[in-house]
Length: 369
Length: 263
Image (cartoon, rainbow over all chains, first blue to last red; front, side, top):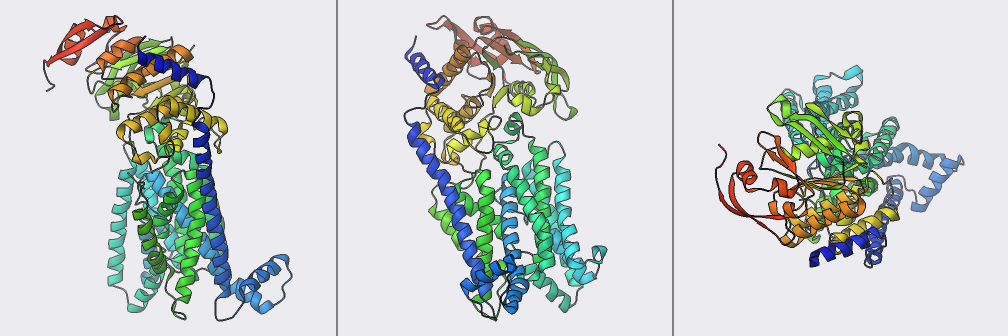
């Protein structure tokens, strides 16, 4: 018997003995540290978000103290309202904005993480896959032509039109040979087509309509009221829960469609389901907040750099990081040159862009490919 | 005892020319089965029909007495592990997580100590323990291949299909992996079916060789001594060669010159 055969014999015997190898303890310890880091990151984001929520509720023309804000919230929850005026300022004026920020931050970041994992493309997000162009066309038709579905104005139009590119992508995905790359290219083609129609409509619009459209296009958390928040809430929560429940399947899909199938996961079917869920979440959010870019594209990448690409953790971590980033950006936008408000999308890009570049350059391991 | 019975199997993409046809094969004993044949004769297509990645256009695959058409992919995945041709198209995750994906069919949402234990033992078995926490995308093609094999082994299935598992490995690991797969069949009673282009490693370690030829048919099935002959290699591969016996009495091919190339 050759030396190598003895080697195989030795290693196979150890493998079958089902005893942990000597180095296992060290690896296991490091692995548990690595898992703990994921939880620590999420807890850190939640802490930041809670502080930012407090600050956001505090800051405004009506002065309310930081800790007082939490007291008012607690009193409201327990039904023991002490100061009706402050309660109204917090709950009717400031809270819808914060809730919109929480839902949009979590929803868009999770939608981006899911799209990137589903389509195996680092540039995929709800916007590059056509949701934004659809929503913009819908809003343009409502504002410039005055035509809206069911007479419900910009929100209904933006929502319905945002779903059209996804419906087309899902139809394409049902074709036998459709790869994730083909689907994302189809999304980009639809994006350009819708963009062209939007541009044509803008050419015939009057300046007032253009101004309204611009306000919608730059996106703002201030566009949402309680009615909007109560519609967004179940859709975003249900969407995130569905994506979280399918996070193990998303991990399997990362190894390729054929390997996924060999492990019992129908990648094509899963892709269709997830695209529809993501489109519903993103369309609902942008219908009420307008276009808030960047969060869906970059938040998942930042999270991946810190905690890795395991979707079981990536999805919830993206959600809490998205909340913290979007609320922080909104707070900065509201305060930096107050009383003038800089739209949140501008701030997220200003804050997040350099932070993302720094992480990319600092991190030795590759984020993609 | 696991058995795979393939009856009159044919497969074609988009109703075009069959990639494989008239495939009849019976595998009912544990062992290392190697599929050989030139490029494009449907070796990968055949193993993908065995685990229902491809749906045959004709014929059937009977797995342990049940037609796989009546089984879900999930049911099949508990019986058949699969190691595809290695790729590196994943978002970066540590090697240990990339291998843990192979535990999908056994694992619940949480990674258990048992999952971690088999992954760590298998990493040691493949000599990749030191890479456990390295990013998957930082690895070389050969290391990707070892990760893919580890992912296949941790599935703990009685049957394992491997598509060119040694293609990117250095000679030491080509030999080691072939011996390891052979050892797994002997010690655990597994059935391992692998595609290879290495005639000598196949001749040395395979229990049975399935030689495929154009146009997607089986040329011969038999022991290495029966299949690895000068005539077969000339006819199937179009290569002139000399045959000698190695120290264990297995045929050893010394390649000479190509006799033709495809039109």
